[in-house]
Image 1 (spheres, rainbow over the protein chains, first blue to last red):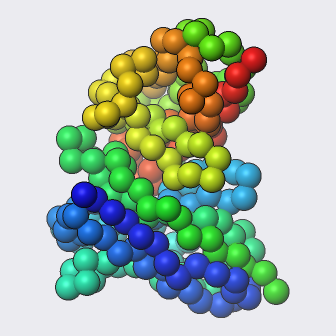
Image 2 (cartoon, rainbow over the protein chains, first blue to last red; image 1 turned 60 degrees about the vertical axis):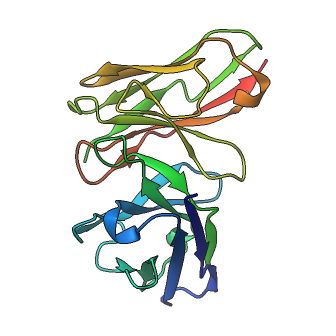
Length: 120
Length: 107
């Protein structure tokens, strides 16, 4: 059974750094398309970052140069390193995995989300 | 970036009603369009992928259609448990983009 469990969220001051983790089970992270999607309080879904099976990564313009998506194959875990955090980064962050019947970025498995609050 | 525009932004309907809403892309995205359902406090759930394919385990009252720039999502007979916000998402190009959502509730 596919499971994704996020951790690492919390309250952080503007300008600070945080690393989110997404521990995966039931599949191999390195063979999957893995993404981070966030949702600010009361707002819609916003794609943040993706890492493909081959290792290629992309980030949204709003986080480019501040956030880095990565994975640890030995731990079967996805990460999101978030630096220079801003108030507008406050959101629930979800990790998600592709659904393999689809041709690409169709996210059929999601974690429960972890809340990041950026505030002084 | 490809902009995804959903309409309406909110919709009220009665149990048993046929409900339809739309998603329009700012450029041709072929059929690289997914639909998600999100209930309050929960993660999104994939319902339809590649515009018209029903995800495994999703009730057959849900369906999707369209290609190019115009897409439609339909619930053939609204059930109380369908109350949620629905999002479309394109993956023709990075950045992946979502529509702003259609909030569905019971009249």
